[in-house]
Amino acid sequence: MIDDDNIPDRDAGINGYQKIDRYNPELIKDLSANYHKVLELIGEKPDREGLLKTPERMAKAMLFLTQGYDLSAKDILESAMFKEDYSQMVIVKDIEVYSMCEHHMLPFFGKAHVAYIPNGHVVGLSKIPRVVDVFARRLQVQERLTNEIRDCIQETLQPIGVGVVIECRHLCMSMRGVQKQNSVTTTSAFTGEFLKEKTRTEFLDLISSRLS
Image 1 (cartoon, rainbow, N blue to C red):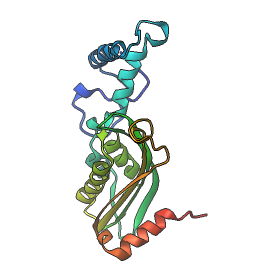
Image 2 (image 1 turned 45 degrees about the vertical axis):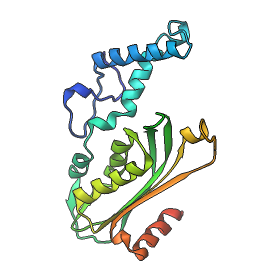
Image 3 (image 1 turned 180 degrees about the vertical axis):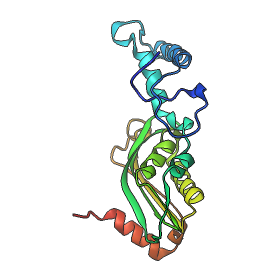
Image 4 (image 1 turned 90 degrees about the vertical axis):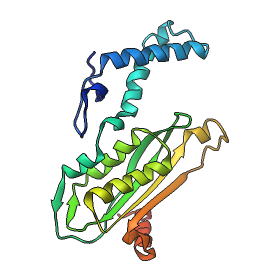
């Protein structure tokens, strides 16, 4: 089965960042069969007109939402590292985050703000959001997601410090459970210079500002 969506073929042994335009037909078939059963178990009729293609759509959607398992954030960073004599803070803020809570498999979404202080190397700016996507496109908890982004940048670039702040709304809180629609969860993780109050405060001030 071929589709225009960018879905990784999990059996292809991909370990890196590249565009994949093919589904694994066997995987789609197996996932679709399971989603067909789920629809039956919740009291639906998966063979009615409106649901005929739903199991396959669900299978493709799940592969898209979890494509991060087949990608290497380290490879993404290493593909665009450049020697540069720059030692001030680099910030990429307001990066859109879409992920799936591993406890209920419901979405959480929001924004990530990522900063690092170079130590001889900088990275292409587009690679920072891609790293966020790699870890977000897995079953996650926000706390681990924050740490994974921080650790990958620190271990790959070896900068003077890394700072990550993520702000998200969780549908497992607003649609079920406590049903608090307006709550936002904020997590942060720091290394190196960002552990110092002055540097951390500068970072937090910059991500909260709106430059004209």
